[in-house]
Amino acid sequence: LGPTITVGEILVELMATTTGFGFKEAQTLYGPFPSGAPAIFIDQVARLGGAAGIIASVGNDDFGALNVERLQNDGVDTSAISKSTDRPTGSAFVRYRDDGSRDFIFNIMHSAAGSIELSAQAKALIARAGHVHVMGSAFAIPGAGLAIRTAIEAVRERGGSVSFDPNVRKELLGSGNLRQQFEYMLQNADLLLPSGEELFVAAGTEDEATAVTHLHDLGIDEIVLKRGKDGATYFGATGARYDFHGFVVEEVDPTGAGDAFGATYLTSRRQGLGPEVSLERAAAAGARNVTLQGPMTGLPNTTELDTFIASTPRRTK
Ligand code: ADP
Image (tube, rainbow, N blue to C red; front, side, top):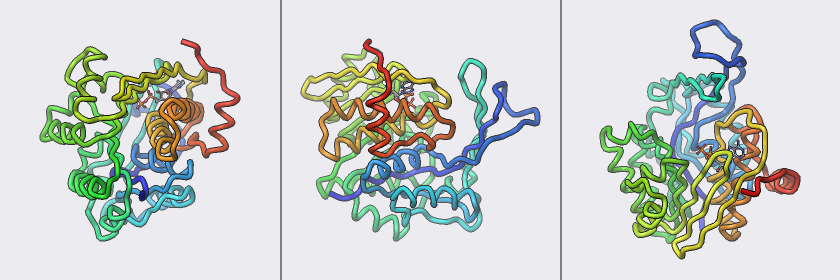
């Protein structure tokens, strides 16, 4: 079928080079790095040889250009990235605290990423698509909801599939119609990629087994739960379960691990690999990505992924 497509924010990330609290003192920043969860995801799909495209918006500036060039060089169809003439490319400032948590300053809603249009190019990409991947965070962007629904309906009609990564904070779910968008995604997803507690938020229960059964009953065939350094678990609608306990790596920058993981799982499945092997490959992409600074720096191609899998120690439980 056609390419995997996604909809959402493209931005650059600038990182503080020292750990500490926030951005009030003058400090050295490192960057810009290309970023945005949907951009990281779709770049990973392309690096593994999957056909890929993104509906997004950047400004007419170097931050936009560096993102588009990166995606293009890796083989992503960038024809549906529109270039805003009156808004700059989105940006995020990040600083780590000593305990590993992060402080962020985001400039997204007033940037080019804050409005996504269903342009003629976006419609053309949708008309070719075979799979739609949706991030929960994309629903916060005006216009993205319409593009997502249009894409899902078109892809469904052509016999394609849908995946959903509910990467949205619990507190946001109560606001506006986000809960409604979330329910729509749960009704339409074939593959769900929650991280930690997002499984409970999605299912509306705090018991893992009950949550998984409920989500399978909604028609979600595959649930792949991300557990950070502890790896990930696959729950199939047939009752199959696989646990992968994780590769042992030194974490330098966790941003993008979940997106690298999700894109690798999906692409491996779309390339015909089984769920157990796909889970291992996804965990490898996630683990490799945290070892390098910059959300997209560690995204492997197929050879790099194979090398990582062969040479990295893993946890046994
Ligand atoms: P998200 O970024 O969506 O919260 P995770 O942090 O769980 O997702 O990361 C996704 C996957 O990447 C994990 O399931 C795991 O397989 C891998 N991963 C992430 N962080 C590490 C780490 N520190 N060590 C090893 N593997 C990791």
